[in-house]
Length: 111
Length: 115
Image (tube, rainbow over all chains, first blue to last red; front, side, top):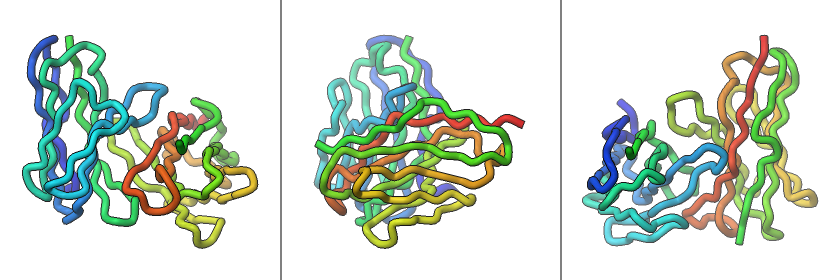
């Protein structure tokens, strides 16, 4: 079984809808991250969490929110989706060595 | 603020040829440095990392990278490309010196391998 899982893997939604992307990990890591990937821009950090009670904004947090329900679970929400949030979203985890381990990604399309 | 630049968004090589993917970082204080690979429809996978030990770092699948402080570079190489190396490659650096908990990624370089 994969160490970092993301659901759903693909999602098509409409402008204005609320969307939640979920991430679970079995690596026992405290640190978790959400990124979005856009062609030519690499990965940009949306939110990160160093433990269950710690939530921090990344460089592009506007329009997104997160919830750290447990050490193993970190969810990303789009309260009111807009077309420029169409992207590939990745969850990652890390121990305290800075090496990050990525999930398979969620491809989100907002029409 | 730390930044990382990958020179060339697309690199094309013939099978068996040398692979060279370039990465430069901005800080005068050496960060930790990473190379990740992303195969189609997959997440990122760690190839190798530099954490202030040996400057020549060997990774998986025959890749290696050399940290050069004077050039603020961490270029990725492989002596002989295989078709299976076709993927997107990302260079990443820690946001400060050493263990900061955050990575900054380059824009990515797509490697094409021609038969």
